[in-house]
Image (cartoon, rainbow, N blue to C red):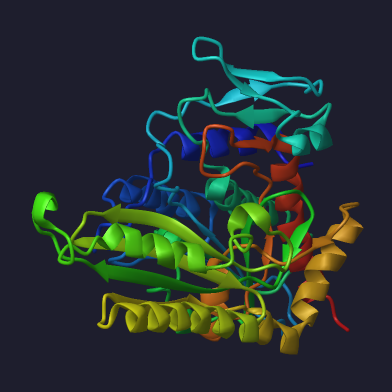
Length: 412
């Protein structure tokens, strides 16, 4: 049996360290405070007995659990990120424990009347009778992805303490800045040296994912002309009105709040405007590569039409691809998904194989030569005050890591 309290204590020790990343920073890691947890992790990995523990100048951490079998076994990896989202504060996290959850509303903060309710968050009802770790309503929790970090460290410790569990060589990696899309940017795949890996960064227990969005960012800059409004007839061009034309020209129902499953979207995520200039920031997402390219073409077509209407280049469009669907890189080696699925089944966990409606370090790593499906870490409602994680899910994810290691080492 795994030491439940030790694993809980480890998780709490991680989430109470603020590691929020910052997209506006040009450094790696993007915030100095990420070093606080990174350095703690290095010390801990050495203390539990891992070998080749290293941390580079950008806070990427790697370590090795050597094989304990004589026959040749593929080197597998497990990867998580230790930063938390800039979407919501991670300062002064105060976790709360809800023991034997009864399926009713959870008061996170009585003073501010902040309620975690199954009427709104139906997934809560999956965990009746379990122990939930929640926020106090003032911060995020950080289970994304400190639950994953905790599970990997705890699994390695368990395997070291139980040499009767046979496994091949295992590499682990912890990254900064995943939440701002840079987690894999400076990951040294060659140094890591694994044949394949798994990110422990999913949500609900049982999740197993090897498909994700193709992703791009689009910047739409609209130029206007400002003159005194009292004498503006025929002269003033209001960029905000033209920007509104652009917004309304895109399919209104192809937005995040109207899509699910394999449906892609355009998402207007930021707008700043004055008469003379308005800037729209979009993200473009689609699982299907053909549809993804078509979405970019739609934005260009609208740009061209509006420019033609106004007789000059009032709109400029910049589109930059961000990441691609890792399905293309994982399907040729589907046995790595099969192993994870079998591990869950042997542990009595129903595998939930579905596409990620987002991105993952695993996507970029797969295109860098390290096929990398994603496995549940257990948390829900990431990036906000309603985030929670069942203790039982953390324990099960830890067991899945150990089981994958064992299955990979078994001779055909």
